[in-house]
Length: 277
Image (tube, rainbow, N blue to C red):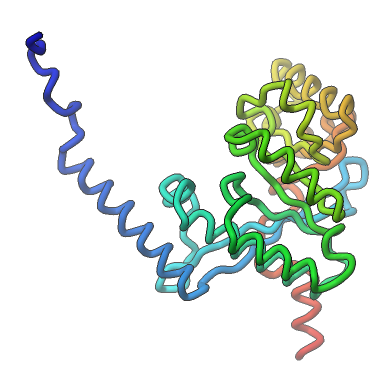
């Protein structure tokens, strides 16, 4: 059957100079990321997660990996994460983030820390070795480690995630479901996941004090968490009015610029440096 006119042509703009330039830039950024990982030009930035009713008290910190370019500047994750998420480079990023986080937990026995990972890293040998070595550093490391898995990542392989979580929870590790509400968690799997914490996606949190729709949606997410005995964390809290509203709603913890930006020099690192001086 003959094709209709134009069906064999590429989509408009696909081979344009602009598209080629964007592709070339993305390729250069990914190559820079790979070089940085080989040279271990990485660090963690720490952001506090505070108790909703006593915002002066930190419940735990989230450790966010930062990758540095050849000049020592931080590469924005949005410029490369989508391109590397499904590749081994993404797995190496997860392994390095875990390594840095476990080392910090070993150095600071009072710290509780959340580290991000993709469900794709569950069977990655380097990640598994890093976890085993880090947990051997001290008897309380496991119980102070929280592994964060995004909702979209968990739904890639729910059966595997469920078994993985149950195995590590027996050693004391906690799990957080990140960006809850942003993806498409099937409730039949949700009942089996047994996450310890639910982090409610920021799209429902911004301006919640004045947004009836977000109030209803967030209350529903909080109710689900309560039903399954999970703590709740509201992400991207930037307005005191939102913080007050969320505390009244019954959210357990708050995270966002209102309480602290991610920093490579958290309080305990500053104290450590002062002792060395």
